[in-house]
Length: 421
Image (cartoon, rainbow, N blue to C red; front, side):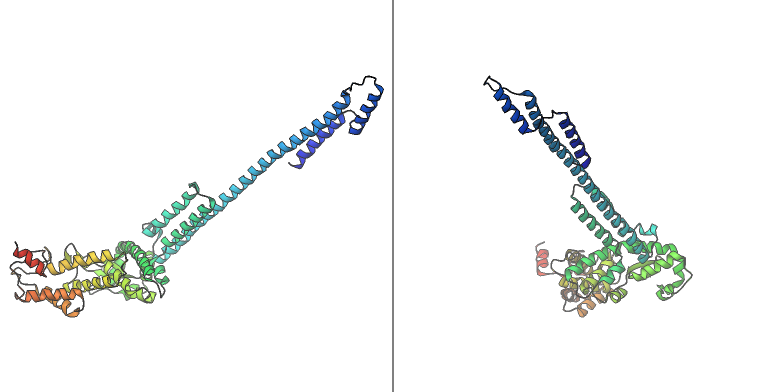
């Protein structure tokens, strides 16, 4: 009860007391009753209504006041509770709103930093998966107030959202510089997966932007190759192109000139990558990235020579030996190995291993001999050696029972199949 209400009620009570008869003291009432008893002959006790009324009036006023105090107190308590609850809710909303504003500010800051590191303007950066992922996390943060969570849970999810925004906007160069010696295999695999996803998205964007500035890099093509030293030297380039070149170098992006297409192509510059990271990433994951970024097989044909295809087979076999048994990369590497080995020993419709007269092609024979002699301790090397031995028995001519797409290594099991046909 507030002071004004209490004073008002006390005033009303005082007025009530003043309206009552003067004789209101309980002892006076009792004394008067006794005196009247002694003067009346009739022994029957009589009720003296004026005094009784005064006495009952005191009791009635006390009862009313007690009820008013009780009822008024409860109403006041309810009001105070509601005010307190409203104040607390307002404070919670302000706290949550402040955290959400922090998330938006964090996005703006990290976005600006990422654009600078990549050398992209805002329009180009908005096409990257980095920005799309970060915006998606920010949209989720903005939806949190509508969710049926406690304040503590909402604040926790906002914090998580901020972490996701920051992680999404980490550029490849930031990731490379974060690598430290002693990284575990589990950590290395997670890092490699994220890094490859980001680079796989960024490289085509760089290629598209580079070819918009062909007049700027074309003078630096010498003998079918891009001269990186002269390209990166101070030149009167357009501002966007200059910034992009800095981003390319900082993020370990390598450039090669495709003479047939007359374009620049991008890839991971592993020399720069290892220099900046201090070779902190386990070699098996570096090898995985090398194999992942450049395929030697496309549409059933080798994109490079037969020897290079043989080297890739050995790399894939080595990866299968060194990757942890629970690695998520194993199935992918295993499929790549099986497919590449199939085309290496069988050839394909557009790239057969035998010439028109049935003779083993010289470049194929050379590649088989190279793999068998260079990698004798590898299972791949041993299998290719078996192929050579078998073909040497027919002077490297196509065997009479040779059928396209059947294994060159004719095992006893295969021989039994042919004998039963």
